[in-house]
Image (cartoon, rainbow, N blue to C red):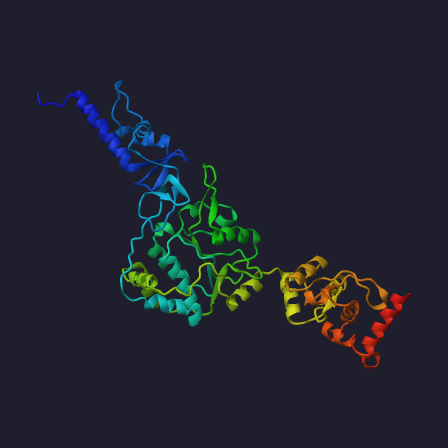
Length: 462
């Protein structure tokens, strides 16, 4: 008397088990896995059964019930299609605008640090120090950080790249500060080997991707794999033991390095805001105070500053602002032959002191320069196309020979130039002077130009 009936006891144990499973796990149909709310990780259906067997009530045959089968048959259990990272939305189960009617597990973790009015001076002074005292450059970085903070999940179309030749200047303190403000769980720190090998699981839960020591200036393959991470709105996730799938790219990218050839930057690059810190490291006490600020409650003041930063003139879809440091990195990451040709072209040195050249003759000229790299016709042609030159075909030049010539510069004008102009330019005269010479009466022409023109006419008449 007073004892609970066995059937009532069994029902009570079953309800208790169901409530426990509902509170802890979310089933995802795409993965056929369960999200463990406590561990913040995925487990297999069999792992659930094994891990929770001791908590499960007995069935009519005296066997422990299967935890997954219980959860699977529970109409009140949480079910989603897959995970999706939705920064700024604190709900666990969400729908997204582009896929109505589909529920997703939101893996974004709200940051612990909240913006509180206070001092941001130590961080702002440090950013100015990293920018060598250049307030314009410091403002570019602060705007970038402020937009990322004010607009969780929205992309900026270019990455930060901060370089210092000195160890210990504290360039990565920006990443540590932003990790606190955005939430450490939402800010993966990766190495460039992960990018090179295509391991991009980190992108499925990334609000800010940090590469603490990027060193891929001579690796175009890594650069090509970085492009979609920096700019594309959707990324393909290659997750171990899962079918590949696409997910919105909600991450901005910040990279740091001690080397000027840190990243491969192409001509006309739009994806990198580059700062090279020339300053020497401060005394240890400076960094003690800086890290104490970042790791303590004071960082809330920096959050407040970023939250209230006026961004009316900031365009996240614009090209990266240009700095002279980008040119430095681009030059440092060029291949030896390309850097050599660029220097010759910038210096107006032979054979680029002429407006029109033959590439084989140019190879011979470079071959006579002591210490010059081995350069091919194809490399010169590739370079000239980048700097505004190009192929002019095979006009007849001095002596009536047909020679394939290239414009060293001003391709648009030279493509429409008279053959006499190309002949004179190939002979060493600037094409602009040649254009003037052929318009003059015979008696007023430059003697050398007159001889070239008359020789060409004689050949043409034969």
